[in-house]
Structures are given as C-alpha cells and as structure tokens.
Image: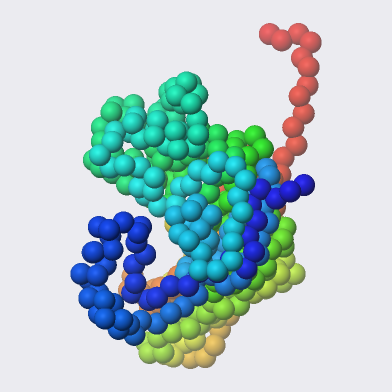
Length: 404
C-alpha cells in the first residue's frame, strides 16, 4: 500500500524573533519597517532548527498521533503538511484533499459570514456547490451557530470560530484531516463532541493526524504515534508503546524539587509503591495501588490535620481522605496509603497532600510530577459518555417470554 503522506529529510530552520510572512508586498514592507537593519544585511538573530530530518509515512485511513513537549516541532510539521509554511530542506508528498485546523482563524476570511466561509472552504477542497449544500445544515447544527451563521466571522468569539472551523473541516469529507491543539479553545463539552466526530471520521476510513497533549485522546483515536523531541523524530510505533515511553520520559524528568526548606514541615516527594506500577509515577492498570508521600518535619507537630486528594486533569475531585490529631517529632515520615482498587481511565492525574494546624496551612502541595495512568480503556468509546472510572462490565441480553 502506498502512503498517502510521505516526508523525506524534512527540515525547517527559523531565526528567533523573525516572523514568517506570506510573501505579499504588504507583509514584506511591514517586515522591513519593523527590522530596517535587514535592508543593510545586518542580522545577529540566532538560527535554530524547528524540525530536522523528519522521515515519516502515513498510510491511507490511518489515525496518527503527534506527541511531544511544547516547542518540539509538532505544529511546524502540520503547517508544512498544510502548505502554510515551506520547508527549508527535504520534501513532503501528499495525496488527497487536506483540511486543517491548526489555529483560530486559519483558512477563514474575517469579512465573510460563517455561511460564506463554509462555501469558500468547500470550494478550496474541490467540492461542488450541491455537495456543500447537502452538508450545510449538518455543519451548522454541529457548530451550534444557527443564529450567527450569517454574521461576519470577525465578530465571532474564539469559541464560535473554533466550533465552525472544526465543523467545516470534519464534515466536508477531505481525504486528510490535520488537527492541532486548537480544540483546547472550546469548552469541555464541545471538545468531547469533536473527539466523537473525529472517531466517526476515522471509522469512515479517512486519514487523520492529531496533535494533542491529552494522551487519553491519543490512546482512544490513534493506531500509531510519532514522538517529536527537539525537532527530531524520536520514536514512531504502536500507540501503547510510544505513549508509554513518552510518559516514562516525562515522569523521569519531572521533579518535585524547589520545595521550601523553612517552616514546620514540608512534603518532599511522592511515589507509587508496590507491584502495580511501571515507574514511580506511572500506574499501568486497575488493582491494589499503594502511594506514599514523604514529609520532613522541622518542628514538633502536635495534633495537626493531614489530608490527601486525587484530581483529574480538569481538576475534578475524584477521591480524598483525612486524619486529625497527628503528632510527629522532627524527622522524616512516609504517609503510605493503600487502595484496593483505583479504576481510572487513561490520562494524567495529580495528588494533593496537606498538613494543617488549627485551620492554618503548614504545607499544601499539588504533587509533582503528575501521575500517568496507562491502563487500556474498557468503557464507552465516546469520552462524554465514559465517565471518570475505567470499570469493565459484562452485558447479557435475555429474552423475556411474558413481559408485564
């Protein structure tokens, strides 16, 4: 099978402080006005490689995830594939119509209405007017913009812009859909709606490249993942393998240092203990889970309050416990918790550990690094219907002979 997207030695070099322009006379004049020294050939700007020698193949019908730290080059790669940015060297070969959702406003003309931009986007994708009309009502309903579809998009909020842009990109049936982290602009309900639609697009056999820091989204939607680190393609492979390696790297480089050394007491670190762990901060599955919090006591604590909480990435409180009347002499102490079961869906979570004395905080720590849960999802395939917990279930459909 021939790849629908292929890159070879794809590289992009930038100068810090320099803004890329479209090549129009207007933009070139603005650049010269802002940096007149460039007219005289003077430039002491530092050059750096945003991408370096990227060799990647994406097959037709594949959903590929792009992961990596901020500034690693993920968005630059999507801009090159979208033909927004030219590579410095190397090449990218793309077969099929490409729709991209990279940043708020990409591809829309601000003076045109939502209706006009929808038809314009469809025409750019090579679709006929009747084909766009057939999809139009569905696009507007998905974007929830019935009252504003004839308003110029320059008057839209960022959330309205994203809703329409995603609806157009997903419903006009391009062969290739490129989606960056821009979905984070929308509210949680709409993000989940978009994820459900991307799942539908994927099941229809179209190709998707998805950039996201939400690794549970990547696990749910992607068959393969490419990990970009410092502009270099560090690893490509099955989602479970690459995401686990990335999470392990993130956890090993994350530190809880920088904690204050003064005061009566400070939590110094936390970690998972016991057999249900693949690293100090990575939980691989449901089952008995042990977690400990190391506390340094500098001055005697007499009858204080200790509490611990577990939150998801949206700061929803999932679990908590507390004990009063704790008395400790100066020294190091581990607070060890054992939970018979912790059936969490894949994704990042964080602990909070506190020590209070008569209502006054001695230490209140949102523990670093985050805990990464990498269990396989076994609940509803749509995030909005899956809930917080990752509990397996068994369904039996039993005929009833005499229903009353």
